[in-house]
Amino acid sequence: MGCGGSKADIKSDTKLGSQLGIIISGAPASGKGTQCEMIVKQYGVVHISTGDILRQHIKDNTELGKQAKKYIEDGHLVPDELIINLVKARVSEKDCRERGWLLDGFPRTRAQADAIIQAGVVPNKFVYLSVHDDVLIERVVGRRLDPETGHIYHLKFNPPPPEIEDRLVHRPDDTEEAARTRLAEFHKNNNEILAAYDDVIHKFNGAKPSEEIAYEITKYLDDPMSERYWYDSVIGTPAAATPTGGSCLDIPGLVDKEGVTNDNDNEAKVEADVEVEKQGEWKEAEKDEDEEVTMETVPSGQE
Image (tube, rainbow, N blue to C red; front, side, top):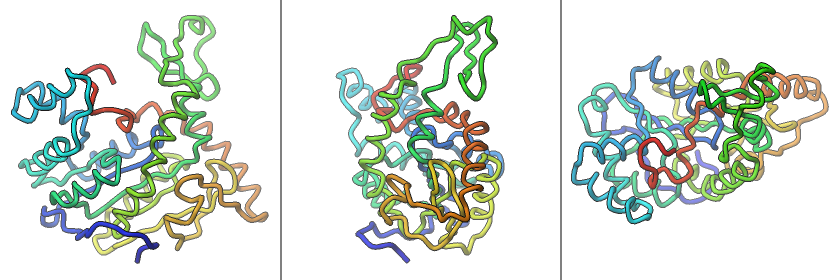
């Protein structure tokens, strides 16, 4: 079943009867936002992010919100225990019990994963989007914001009209240095998180066009008997993939570096896939909110 290593005791019942309990994970700019939209539209589940929960509790002045607000005002991270309690309370609400839930980008550390499992927030589906770092960085670094319209362009894949180019802004979070910092933080914790969900995790090639990814995810979510629907990849060059099946998530290179070499017969397809991916999927970076960074410290409107 697993690929080795310790993991928490996961029983895929979500305590929600037949309703879906889904976690979606992937690096910043991996396309989680796009796939979350599809899943919510297709299955009617409740989309949950820790940032949204936190802001709502602070806005409603709940007891948990008061506690979180004090940490934020003091410039501290909100403790894991409090975040776990917020998530547990949210998935226990009526809409989540009746419709199921989709937890977006959380947990972000192994300690959070173990704690949330022990708290009874257990998914029966775990979607992991895998994209090579070089592609993630290219998606992010080329973005430019038009401060007058709020529209986001990409210098290579969606160039702005020449007459507005001079007014575009390169946001601090969209620099290569900032992107690599976020990715380093993500990779530091990623393998351990995946190991915690080894019994339910399902890996998808997030470098493919979003429609293809959505199709594969739908096949997986529609199969109640699929304990493990693998869509693993052998990576020929950054962001290009050929399905192979049967690979373990802890194989060095697949999870953290994704640099496994493809065979020569696939080189032409690899090159074509790279070009399709780069031209068609840069907007995936735009839809992700990058809550992987320090969302628990960010008041409304500052992420």
